[in-house]
Length: 145
Image (tube, rainbow, N blue to C red; front, side, top):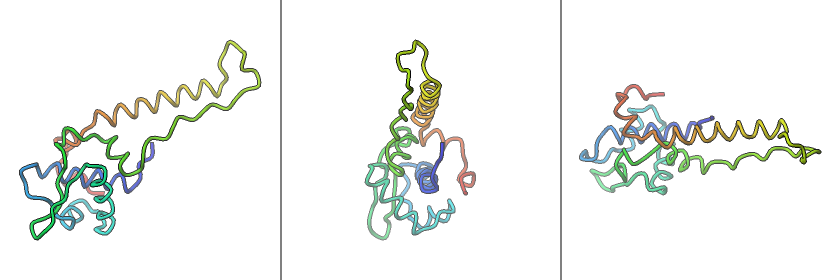
């Protein structure tokens, strides 16, 4: 599994918001960027994508900033990755074999089955891993790239 830098930065920013708590005032872009080692200009773009996906909400004004749109326990990593990098790719179709009437699957079909199992396991881990779980395990300094 490859995670883009943009997706990793999105996760780090969301963890900062999760760790600040729902009762805390909104976090400013500058503060998130500094605490997580994310370029500020890049973070602006990422937060706009996350806002469009309904994962964060923004508040304007002098005391404005960003906060999670939902409780951290309701936001999983699969949602975050989909918001940033788009939906999962469809499974690869195994290349056709000349003798498809055989009782045994081709090597390509066997491999395709394994790749699909890996994708399923990956999805399962991402879906069960919430921001709340990660925030509870890490201190803010643990997540600096």
